Amino acid sequence: MKSYGQYCGLARAAEVLGERWSLILLRDLLVGPKRFNDLRQGNPGIPSNLLTTRLRELESAEIVERRIDGRSVVYRLSDYGSDLGPVLIELGRWGSRRMDAPREGEIPTDSSLAAALLTSRTEVEVRPFSVEVTAGPAVAHAEVNESGVSVGEGADPAAQLFIGGPGLRGLLADGDAEAAVAAETVTVDGDDSLVPEFVRAFRAPLDDSVGDAPLEI
Image (cartoon, rainbow, N blue to C red; front, side, top):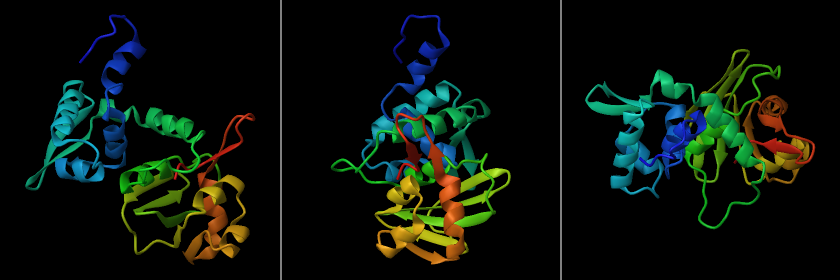
């Protein structure tokens, strides 16, 4: 790991977090513990040897730790690493400000979609609800209540609201659910009365120069 040669907290953080794939792996572990193969399959662009190296570096920095779960070894954030949660969420919000259409080769993953759901505006009062969200090939779910949001990868057959479609990002930008459903750019199943709650929970404001920053999907 390269040093910046500066006695500075940000420099120390950059030494660990600035390596390629480190932030992405931490994003995935923020959603929940993962096996090596889970991380590999969820990030097909990372070579196995590089994944091994990054995990070792994050372990050495005491940000990630290994635990035995049944017969499997799982990686999870340590208490120290969990303190990065708010930082990672705010970085995701910041990065989404300049996101428009996906670039060639870019697709959402289950982990990236679940992490995006963590950007829920927990300070906004909403009626508690559970939702399954689909964005391209990615599926994730969330439960929103008074204490915040909990998320997970994959489907949730017991969700109250099922929502997806190519117009989802636009819906969260302008908040016009009726128009999005009428245009068939957003699909809704389950309790459609929860769509306004979904928009209120996941539509986050930005500075005046940028406008509204929706969930980064």
